[in-house]
Image (tube, rainbow, N blue to C red):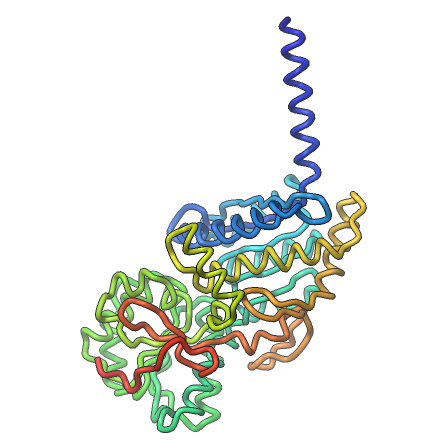
Length: 404
């Protein structure tokens, strides 16, 4: 009897293993623990929703999609390690994820070396798609594109051109890229930069720096913070010190998450954020996704969730068109070739990968050619971050100058 039980167990294990082998595996390094774990959870929810929808309709060419998450704890070196594990041990067919630019740079380097396609869904540093890596693709805008909506606002809105600007940014690739892009544009318009200061991530006291900024009396105060805590403290300390510009402007990162308003309360009112959009809120398919996500998770999706959800559909589209043979190396290259031919619309917007020059002169490889359309200026109003510019993507009217 014991032999029969063991035999039955072995058969069931063999069947389960065989079924799993038929799945099309997507690897996703994300911060599932540590300070950035809330972001990892956002992407997990988005990936899972998309995969469940696709699998419920029969999968891709009869095969189920499977997401394999690995925790990099927001540590760059660990991101490289778990990427190698996903490729070499988990045998994933394609990669996505990353969360922050520092981790994505490591993931991209490993994927390029091990010849595995990597679709970047959120990390924004220009360098990720300006190294000439043919195995790396990106749907979302680069960091230097984040200020595009802000640039349009100050040019298109009468009287909005800054008379001067203070620019404070963290010393990460994310911070330096966005700040450089914003300052380059402002200088091209003859706007004086009265303060240009970098700070270490997770700074605990910004008051000495804010005292220095206040002395420069900026007309606009531009802030870049990849960390939510930094974004909160920057804004709190600036307002407590008495800095009174016509506009406080953040650029995604910590300025684009619910905790920013939740922690600051009234101090968040009217703060702008120019960054990647969350899809066009006026597009029917995007609206439907917002409601679907809210119905399942009790929150409305923003940039991260929309990017993660769209990434799975982009990958599924490529997998459907790729000629897969069962030879992992050849299949990875087939997926890469299929991604090159991508031309579709997702809830995040249009996507087609190409090579072109970015705002700072970087030569992009496999960057979404529609990325310049995917920057939006939003503003915190009564606890909600709502699009205000450009007009065609606006959800509400902007408040300018800041009256708080």
